[in-house]
Image 1 (cartoon, rainbow, N blue to C red):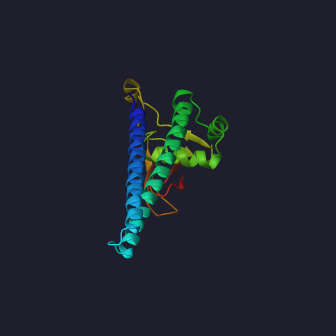
Image 2: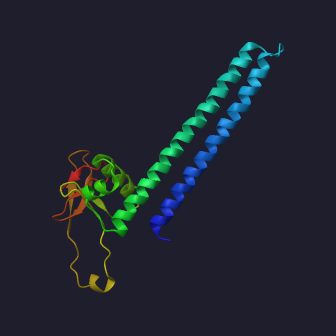
Image 3: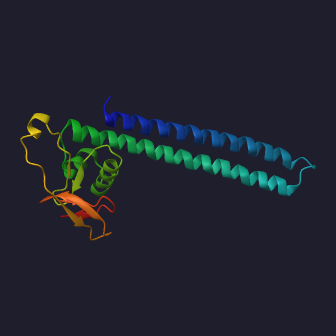
Length: 184
């Protein structure tokens, strides 16, 4: 199992937990609702107590619906992420335009999804080259040839957006590690 597979498995597990939590919250809300309705007919229970019970009921049901919605969104993201991983790592498609045409998802949505994936470690060392409109993956260095290669020179570039110092290889284009603005 690769590192990316572990990340996807953990994301799926979290989405399942959230979905289960949503059903539990709605279940408690329904039970509270039934109890509140029964208390309406009990003359020994004050109406303000019933109102409070109904308010708590709405909180549980509302929280459950919200948690379910978040779980559904996470599952959709996971399915899109699996498509991107297949296209990029297994099929070698790094052009954002080719990913867009293969997925029928808008350019900006693909770019945002890939940015999030890079930030979450799905593509370690990768970045999005906005001028070339492609994902640039970190190259795996063969240990035998690494000794023959000259070390890459880096320089510090101050981000025009947030003012942070970023170390990037000389002559390359990268994104600010804090605000994601393009650096040269």
